[in-house]
Image (cartoon, rainbow, N blue to C red; front, top):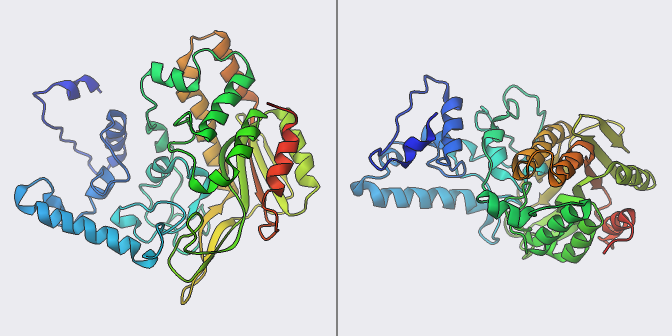
Length: 379
């Protein structure tokens, strides 16, 4: 594909014939940066629009377009008028995903990647996650690898990720500065730190400087009001809960230490995998789906919008390890010290997920303290 055509001012648009095989076209649009997959006017949603929405861009229907979008937004939010969040994660505005209310936690900081991976599903989890291998849901495709949010040009990315990292501690510092807000993005996180993590921000920064490179986390919550300014979601009159969860890249040595820590605490379980696909499970008798966030509301069934699925975790791990190469390793000359450093970390580190089922303890920092102890002495 000649992407330079799009820079020609005389070219006002492109017409694609998909022949019912839209994936190639979607990949081209994603590569061009012309596809906003969270927008109702994206390629996937455009096929779902009604006749009124199909006239977007015409002067006579601008007001209808505004009303239609407003009505759609209000319909999504009608169950949560008293809180700022309908769900712990931002729902998609696509019509075909209007009933979706369950997602795996792993893509929390890369939601566009998850939406693109599942764009061709016939159904979306509603009420419960169920069997992720169900034909109705489809597979978590590899399409997301054609979508990567931009960190700017190479110089901008080096300014954020390091011009010349020489030691693992240099990489640790990048992750810590992301937690502190001085680095706006890292490859695994499209957005700044979530508000609920502000409560443990200093500890998270220290944890990263100790070599536990967090890409996802949430503190435990035991029955907070559903209108809580930080943890609330779902509407008035409810109570929300969540298990403590930490997901991080760690060296093999620290993986062994984490294994020992989890073994001593029956309430904790651990999943780990490296870039070669070697898996490690601790405290897991049978690998089932775990609800990480759930809510109890009047006149409604219990909602569990965020889950952990061991199978989905392995799919996410492939993407997570690939980001070391596509978003970081590619910044440095082949064979340079910085290149060798990032490549070594990608090939030797484990991606570890730890769940603490003791969400009702009076001290929500017990798991965090245990992780800091595993990290050992650090600045």
